[in-house]
Length: 312
Picture 1: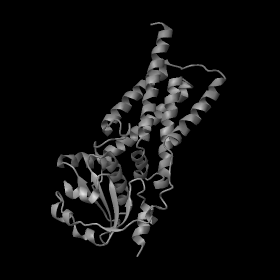
Picture 2: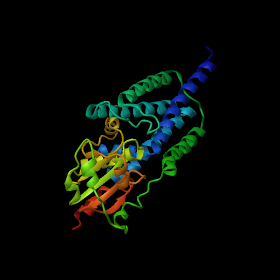
Picture 3: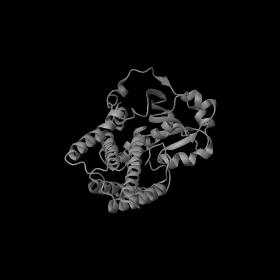
Picture 4: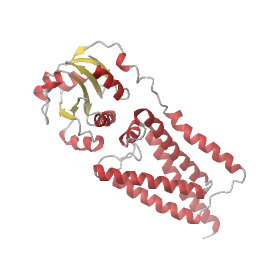
């Protein structure tokens, strides 16, 4: 094969690798919360730093994607690519050891569901391709303009996650102080009609975080993941899930959310709709059967819940 054809072939191969990284980064942005929760789960950064760490990692994926497509500083770019793939592979192995080969690994956000093992195989193939490219492809020589191009790509890559999906903390300090019309949450239908688990009547006394979720709702699953992490970090917070859906959806719901540390029941039909309405998930902060706040999953904040619990 002629040298020019070889160069074109490896340019295409490198560009395809770059597109995979760009696609991976972009799909993590919408929704970004599951990726943010990953770092909370790992104990890196906490609730307030995790959104910035998540966007930094997405920016790194964008940068790798741009460098591979532009064929810029290929030795450095491929070392960065290989290092990133090894890092993510170690994380996947950690997930498999702790949770098994269950649920969505999140490598492509919610757009393409992959188990940790599938993602690990994908990374192994990409690593093999990287080593081949490293051996046979040097990219393009941009001369003195190379550093300027790198700088532009670097700034663009790390700015894009914040431009496309910026961090908004404006709600976190105020949502529990909103003036809401308090109302009594009638749980009689839950006690009498719920299936799988029998709901404890203690939900009618004391303070509890009670969430209504559909097992097929992607936003509900994000909310359940966040609640699971909050419960892990503070087991003293009383949480309860009232789920809606077919019973065969329970296993995939919990494989994805891993929220088995939160007690739950299944309530279907008009009883569920009467309590939850149609916009799910619904998360209530309940004090002696009175709903004191209706919080969406993005506003759910561990520190603010703990302040609420501490109030007399």
